[in-house]
Image 1 (tube, rainbow, N blue to C red):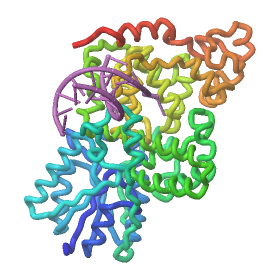
Image 2 (image 1 turned 60 degrees about the horizontal axis):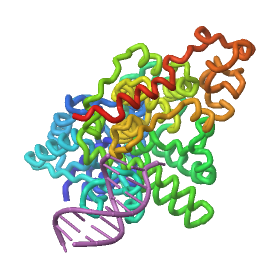
Image 3 (image 1 turned 30 degrees about the horizontal axis):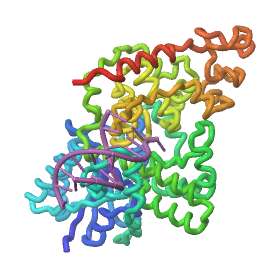
Image 4 (image 1 turned 45 degrees about the vertical axis):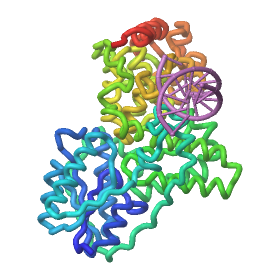
Length: 470
DNA sequence: GAACTTTTAGT
DNA sequence: CTAAAAGTT
């Protein structure tokens, strides 16, 4: 038995269903924990909104770990150095962590494991983040999946591991005071929209299963409704694990058969997260490189003013502006609107999807290394499943379909508050007297659209469509 | 059983 | 169009 163990926390900020923590407490008499806000050149730094969430989550984790007798230390810097120095300083004999799946992170962790082994420190790694490991899901010919539906058919037939019980601790210690840089004002304000941490995550799940699941299919696509689970940032930081969610839903389905369809639908959405990690694991640098190679040849427009109008929610297209403002104010955007805003940027504006992905990376509290780039590539058309057609959403018809009375637009774009529902998604089509009556002066109180939807759609089909092969 | 061909679907 | 499974040699 090793006497001194170290748990390196990364995307698994929880005490329940945490195999690395569990193993450390099982095998070691003395357990410490670290989190490193990594500044390694080869690793992508966390975005601003996520970083703010992280810091609050760490404070809560520190208290939960103290109840198990585990002290949490937080460092800034290069993780390879920090881990090695910490193990030497505290005579750590065994290090435990839960795996991460990005190519750079895997190489990084493998190198650290090797160097620790050289120092005589044993390293054990586990799966805390995924329903199944990416190498466990294979097509019949042994390759990885590129299309979601067959991936999901495979995954749902697997035996998903049951969550493990919370570990028995080694008594109780005083929680360390964690010293962290304060948040920028913007991030501080958006955190007011959220309850952070493991307990909040479980409360959120319980509330969703009790109230939201029943109407999930009906409401999940309506951005004005509170119809989604809201678990994404908790999943991002591992405040709750997907296997905990999986089995909680299975349990509900068994108890109430009327919820079977809703439950399956919700689990398939949870499976999209595993699918994104599948792509992250099997493909080359999905945040930087289009999965369809021919997209490397596309000449994206350099249009800084349009990009800025998009970022600020000043495109003059109501549902787009509503989404971008919701993102800025809360660190979150409804999924339907994420698709619409991403389509407008990458297709109508023909701006490189990576610029949009980078903005989401910085501003979403739930931005994760798999879902964010994989979803952007899906919308931009360069994703894993090569569709012969392009998914160019029309933000007007989408708005009319999913926000029919304009409640979502009115909430985030108060300039349009009084506009008739008939024109709430296309104010440029309203007569002058209709606009005047609603107190709107297009071009002054609310922008005229920065792009013509019809001609820009044709431009995108032309630019992204048939030609441009390498 | 591997290699090739056809069918079906793509949130 | 391509991916994946099913069918065929």
